[in-house]
Image (tube, rainbow, N blue to C red; front, side, top):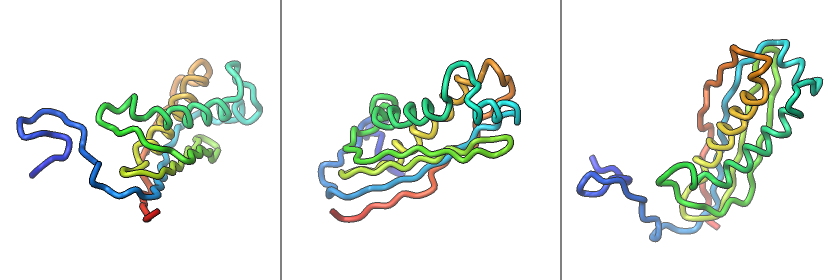
Length: 149
C-alpha cells in the first residue's frame, strides 16, 4: 500500500497537489466538552473570571483554523474564505461545531478540526479553575465536500 505522505525511502513528505484543480471546499467538524452544571451556569451568566468563555473560544477557533498549516507539519496552507465556530450549550456539556470553507487544491477538513480543537481547549483553559473534571471528547469530521469553481 502506498502512503501519500511517505516517500520511497520511508521518509515523511508533503504531498504534491500541483496537478489538482481549484475547487470550492467545505468541511464541518464537531466536538464536545463535559462540564459540571455549575460551570455551565457560570458560562451562561458570564461569571468565569477570565472573561466571556464562548466569545474567546470562538476567536481562538477561528485563529487556529487560519494557522493550521503551522500546527500540523505536512498540512498545506490554504486560502480559507470562511471559518465559523458555533456552540450548543446543554446541562452538562457544550458542543462545538465549526465549518471551514476554502477555494483551492486541497481540503478544509484539518482547518475545521483544528478550529473545534482550539475552541474546546480554550473553554477548558478558561474554566479549569472552577471545574477539575472537564473532559473533551468526540472530536470528529462530519462533512467534507468539494465542488468545481
